[in-house]
Length: 311
Image (cartoon, rainbow, N blue to C red):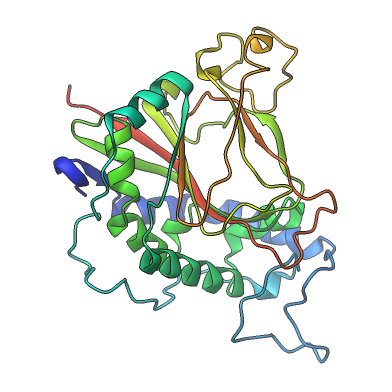
């Protein structure tokens, strides 16, 4: 699917169905585990008489396997006006300076990627998904790390699939990756309210993708709160040569990471902004000290693309 300047973002229906079939047995196992997991009391999904609450977005951890959907979902949320299912990804202009920043620092903040219509569209998709949780969210929700978290939501929810096809996200990633042919979506992750945050870490790769061929990204649906929730990156840490490719959480005292530990880049993105970073860049995000976002929201869609070039 072509972004600006003729570049493409490739996401196939066939690969989506293969992934769904291949993970079926794993999902059944996860479902069994979740059924035995204790509920964590936040916002209940059921009324006092046990009936399912409908018609309003529900945020909060409530592990009940009977609430989960197992099938493909279609939220029925219309694309923004002027966008059709035959439309190319919406154009968004990336500057040479932004490309240079990503190469130099290992991360770049791109403002105002989503116009208001796209932002409301993505929020509506997210509200639907939280209100109708998919079984693929069960392991992450049971952990309590997020109020809601689901990997590869584009494979199970047609609304998110169309967002990836038609929103400006593809244009941004194709240009930042300087893709001559295409960028390919390898995984995505819908994340709502990181209650415990994530300390310093390197993103692990999903699938046989080399770090140098991958870009990590997320687009936020909410402004960053004043006291917490701001992502922090170690400038140029993608150049480190001590963190193993299989590592996730790291200590800034190990290897050559002390060389980068004092050069912090803290971003306070607003709704509709994107952050894009090299897969080896070390970063963290702190949640609220109470581990409860209360009435605040941090809704993010993120993931990985593989940047491909012709042989």
